[in-house]
Length: 411
Image (cartoon, rainbow, N blue to C red):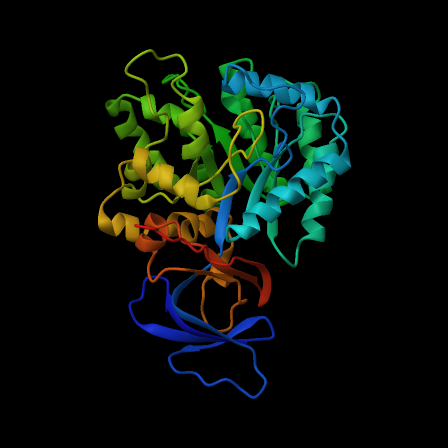
């Protein structure tokens, strides 16, 4: 297959891409197709690595309103609604909803997904279902599974045993939720347990960390210290960290030293956290998104996640990472032209570091031919004009395509 006349990322010059046996064979201008070779002329569209979903909950996706709606819209009512939903979960229900959500993601250019799967369930039915789906879809979308204790490790019956069972079943990542544990001491112990479990099974770590407006919720410093001391470093991710939005600057200044030393990743979820945070505020209301610009300036890797897709915590969403990016750029005040032009890196290259995908993610000769074609000549125009993902390829296999919409102005 020969892909003609594309802008590679934001390069102003046009180039061609030759694909053979599912890999990038040659990337150079003016390549010639072999006889009978499929040719796609992109006419100046841009090519990017596939978008990455750094943080989503596929086990709860597309369940909004079942068994009831989250009327208050709060995080904690969402947890309660999901607890009620878990009583009637079946493996097929989980797999069907998750598969449909992944199809939405693929249509929007996603090729890699890190999903948190609730393991505070004695049956571990959602984990079983997602593990099966990961295998079934391995040729289309790379699914990475986090063993996530939604109701706590130490605050849920047999929480530690359920976490270890999930690791033995095949989870890729160990999670935790320290701010939801009964006590601060339980929260710290849950982080110690999660890091040790990851070391034992050679897994990554991704913690729901300080997803609360309480500026006294400071588990991120403990997680950073454990990442640094254990040597796991960039194998560790702190998700949400919304309490950092409320930290006083003196504390934040001290905190950023260990964050830099830890080399750990951060995931912000701008759509969901602007919806959930600031619920106890009258006015002014906090935006509730972590300090993205400051973390990037500090040398920490930051990516964005959609977090929830039509579930008890967030009633909207169709798995489009550009929606999360668009919101994040606004609330984090990252609206300079160069910031906008290069913002795709937050949901591509930065996210690849979060998922620990390694060098194979990049578009270069010899790597798997996994990429998207966006109907624009650069990312500023693609983002601003909401341009279509024309093609989504995984290892040379077309997994989704979109026909451009035709619009007419009649005046």
